[in-house]
Amino acid sequence: MITSQMTDSQLAQEVAAERRDLAELLSSLPARSWDSPTLCAGWRVRELVAHVTMPFRYSAARFVTELVRSGGRFNAMADRCARRDGAAPASEMLAALRDNATNPWTPPGGGLPGALTHDMIHGLDAVVPLGIDRRVPQGRLRIVLESVSGPQALRHFGTDLGGIELRADDLDWSFGSGQVLAGQAQDLALVVCGRKLPPGRLHGEQAPRFTQA
Image 1 (cartoon, rainbow, N blue to C red):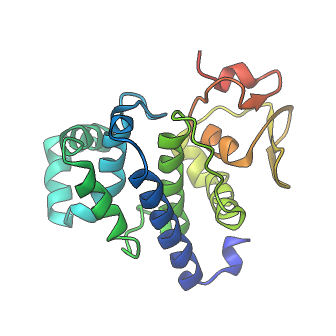
Image 2 (cartoon, helix red, strand yellow):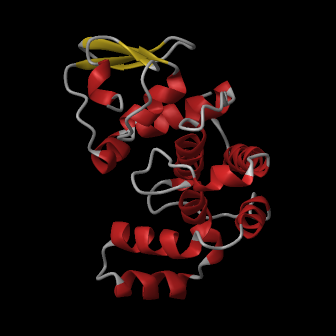
């Protein structure tokens, strides 16, 4: 599925489906899992879900106010708000995600593919450390792979992929050139986004660079 061949309506449907799938998956977690660590350093599942739902819960004015409070530093603002908002009951955060499946929010400059990427990558950030074998639908995943391998995303994440060819072993997709780093396509998307994965998910001489110690 190539993003350029899809209408905005089709992309919006994929975003909504991803949010609904994530809400359903999270709703099945035992309460203790909400305090489990994620691939986002320092965030538990609850902080991560608070971050994912922040665009739905904050007005533009509140977003600006919070950003000013953090001196214009988005990452600092996002971390502070996630830690504060993550104290809310899990049911409230789940409702915010489920009720906003069709919310038109998109990240600045990212459009609908960026919204899908934001939600999918953060969803995987939560489930991968929990050992949940979630397989993202292939069509949806290809949209995200196209998004994260674009020049804007590569600059944003800043992951050093020099001399490496990412090669999926579960679908026909590769990116870059050099020593082969193989794994599931969704795991390789996480690599591009700067995540380090649990041992055994990546293969190749360069796998230790992108694997948790």
